[in-house]
Length: 119
Image (cartoon, rainbow, N blue to C red):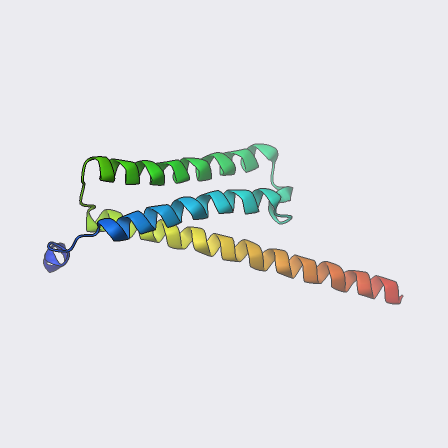
């Protein structure tokens, strides 16, 4: 397949390092934001802890992948880099979604307070 040979002579180590570091930061940030989010406070406690555990596991897996690639002088496979970049994109979308939901909830709350005070 022609796609397999596309990145044959390209060193993807820098892109891989950037992608896994970004993913680790996003996972930890999402873990913190979702824990403090008013949107997800309605979830059962066990689900919130499971979410935190999975995000921390993802962050540690990203760091471990970087450590492994550096210690073994490993050239990352393009499909694996695509998986990491896709995970980064998913995490970024989750962070943006949480921020938009929180902003919307704050606007709705302040609007309902104004309506209640006008009565």
